[in-house]
Image (cartoon, rainbow, N blue to C red; front, side, top):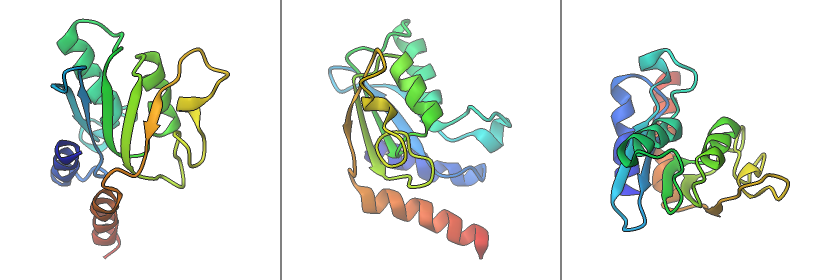
Length: 144
């Protein structure tokens, strides 16, 4: 989660909402890294999770990311949850809950929905206070 937090903090340069994500392979090696870049790229799909998944697929040469773990500082939204399932990521670890648009247990529970053909294990609240502080500080500065 420390590496994901570093990526989230790096968003300050582009004025994107500070969310960072990494993909780890079965040996625990980082194979994909992403941070929110919607503002930077002017791309509504440039969420941290999507960019980390793309990087991991490129690194491994396979869009099937079985055996990996996605670590992200904020609960994935429905779009990202769909991408996670499409990539067959079996484990997701996240920090802060997203009570407005979460897709991994708060508003929706897409990642564990039994009606879907693939599911992920979800580990929530990892270093939650740190992840929440990065977000709260960003929004306080924007309102300030």
